Amino acid sequence: MVRLTVQPLVHEGARLEGSNLGAYTEIGERSLLENSSVGDFSYCGRDCIFQNARVLRFSNIAASVRLGPTMHPFDRPTLHHFTYRREMYGFGESDAAFFAARAARVCVVGNDTWIGHGAIVMPGVSVGDGAAIGSGAVVTKDVPPFAVAAGVPARVIKMRFREELASEMSRIAWWDWDYELIKERFDDFLLSPEEFVEKHRGSGA
Image (cartoon, rainbow, N blue to C red; front, side, top):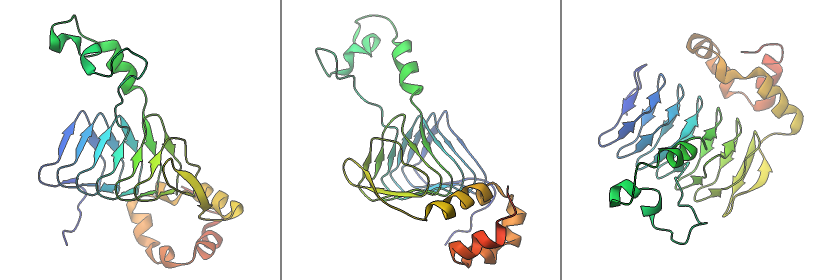
């Protein structure tokens, strides 16, 4: 297994356009990132497509995941893209306003999240800190922190932690700790969530 370094690891065939990566990040083979950012320690598997997406820290994203897929407008006489790529077909000038509005619908994936194989998170949707998305899910609505969502369309099927525990975990926000602090407290991440919260109840980022 390749050991990650501070510098991002971008595998063969992956392409970044107008995107940036944090420290200890990894982008899988043949993945495409457009107008997106990936925070420290987050990674994605092969064949992922992120468009107008913001992935925060420690996010775990499996292969073939799609974040913020660009969509055809459905309210026009035709679904063909010549109506917003008119210059390509000689029908008129650039459609800059259309693409600016599309780019503004940012998909946000929170800290310490898991997104399973082949899941799709739609434009403008947010996945809360600590949430998990099942494989093959199509997420059309915001997912609360520490929720587990699955299905098509995705719905919350359970919460990872009871409300008080989730609230404490959010307050501790360990994902904002710096590298050396995480390294120092590494063994604490092998505790139960209850033990972890009890130990760090008085601390924060």
